[in-house]
Image 1 (cartoon, helix red, strand yellow):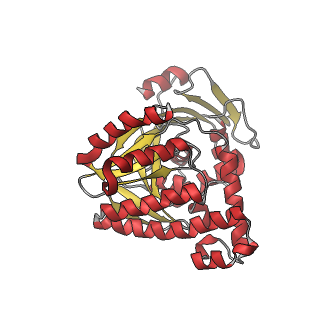
Image 2 (spheres, one colour):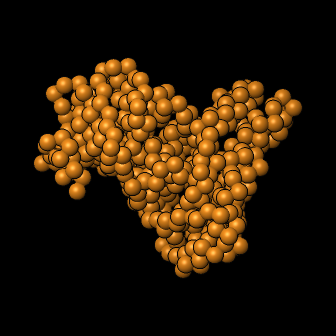
Image 3 (tube, helix red, strand yellow):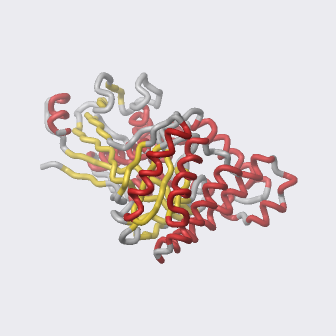
Length: 379
């Protein structure tokens, strides 16, 4: 279908297609840019980029999600934001490639995506990784998964202005179907953690309007970096809970709270990966509950809507469900892990209680962990 749309827009069939998934993070929130550990998995939702090389230096891009708009720019120009917010990610990726020493030529691009946007499920990372896969395929650049992830992060940090870590881009590039991906965000080493047979991943979108996410996200990153600097550390990966508490008098309230969350969250990630591999749902439930409470009290990024969804899940299933807010916070989604036999009960509880308590309607996705970046050259 997208190939037909591409031909209608650009007058020829695409030469190739790259697609990359969104993600949900099981645990390890705000640890990635602090050099710590995370445990995300790829969603079945994907961003697809159909591409065709051009003889000039023009990048012409259309999106099936925004059919009335388009963007066009010269791939050799310095980055400047255009009128279309979604297209600035394309400009940012091209700028990141150029600054890395890879000079992309002209391209026709058609973007289509079913990754829910603005829900903490990394639709932007899916777009960045898919775009990088398209450019690497078109210009025969042997970029590995870590390089693609680093370029996507650079595009977002340097040009979009969101100081994210590398988790979203790396899991979008490297995930294996059916598994979570334990990532060491300092070395970029990865280790699979298979989702046990009979378990379900349920994403509950709060549909709470997300506001000030990037600015608040950046402020919390600044608190983390300041705390590490005051403690004389390269980053918070090197810190311990005891060390953070020993420096409490030298830290602001925000710096202390953010740092304590990060160092304790790192321990929860490693323990959660072990619980996942061992099929210990009760242990995983306790760890995610601790992680969510830390997001409430220490990182202060939850909202009543996501807290309510977590409470509904726990009231319905108790220690048979692992549940917490996922993503950048201030709205977005809650991730739940439970037995497949309990999914119906969980969704019924959300249906019965969430609107009554919040006035909002939740959107639910029962997910099978997806695969990372895929690139295809058409004959």
